Amino acid sequence: MPFNDATAAGAGPEALAKTSQLLADVSTWGTWNSFSPSVAVVSAHGRFEAGADVELAVALDPAAEPLRLPFHVDVALPGRICWSLQLVPKVIQPFVLRTYRCMLLDIDSSTHSIRLRQIDRNWGPASVLVRLFLAQKIVAGLATTASDFKDSLLHLDAVALQSSHGQCRRHFLSALKEWHVCDIHDTTTTTTTT
Image 1 (cartoon, rainbow, N blue to C red):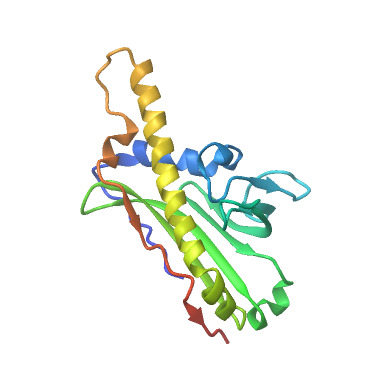
Image 2 (image 1 turned 180 degrees about the vertical axis):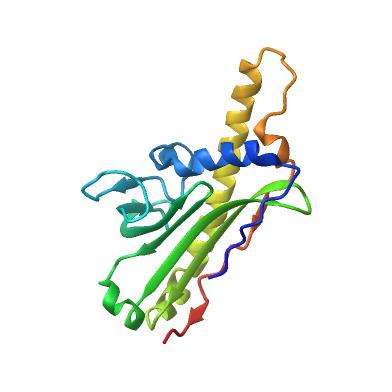
């Protein structure tokens, strides 16, 4: 899975750092993320970090209780969270279903805006079922997450503006004049791995 590690001038590292903080603080997801309203760390050490096992609530149907799915955190870095679904033991995942999901923040060099990219990939025979029954709900949920994330950042910026008491300074959301939801990969991608 390719990653874009580019950071460009314009939006600036301060803006990227502030947005990364919101994404990384999974304890606050219930306040802004309606698609994945909670992340509970179930590992013995209790911290959200690479190597942790978590239970992710996923609201595929807004009218029903969210599903609680087991994930393993593969990457937990500023601006980058990647995790894999653990419905079956890792050794048989290639033969049943392997799901890998990433949330990445970066700066779009052409627009100088902060970009949230979400990637959801599925492999294995059961990925056909995911494509048939869940793909549209997952893609809609990822779009909802992006919208919720933007709204939360806009709220945080409004609070920051109110608390600055008229001081002229650049706030971290000045780079979010245009919000781009990029690279939301349809879960219909089926890849054969050897």
